[in-house]
Image 1 (cartoon, rainbow, N blue to C red):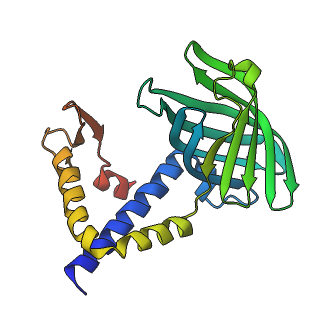
Image 2: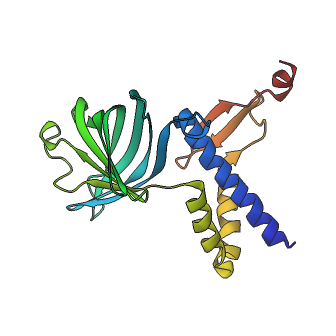
Length: 226
């Protein structure tokens, strides 16, 4: 097996593991195998009037107990010309109704959304899952000054299988990847120091702005003895 193939395999494993760890951290129900839960995740990718919206979403609910539900989305919003960038977060979700309509699922509930003047709570929201491929979100415009216009906020519904298919398709462009992968990894390793350079056993990350931040590394010896 070639070095390139080995590298791609390692990179793929790294990316998938990172994705799953991110989902685990934000939505423990999503991948712990708790029976009966419905869950999903994916990117926000939407154009609302003259605005571009991009970010991520994830959510879950228990069909037998809709109060056992949650949804989180963080996305950036910027005008098409690149001006007026800002961020929104949707949190504190509670599902109160789920209806199947053919291949679609319509979910209604309430959420909190961050706005310019602060968070707005108890905002009615409708999520629509279209054929398990796309997500549309409509928030009550009267409670947020019609901030998102008349169009829903759209996103994609992903799965590990869909992500692997996309990654495999990208890897088929070997000429590009042979150049891109080393450039990407060089940049990552230049900005992340996985050693104990600060002397306290922490992982040090250098951010784009040059600032440093640290997080505790797991004590493997201690964990193995517990």
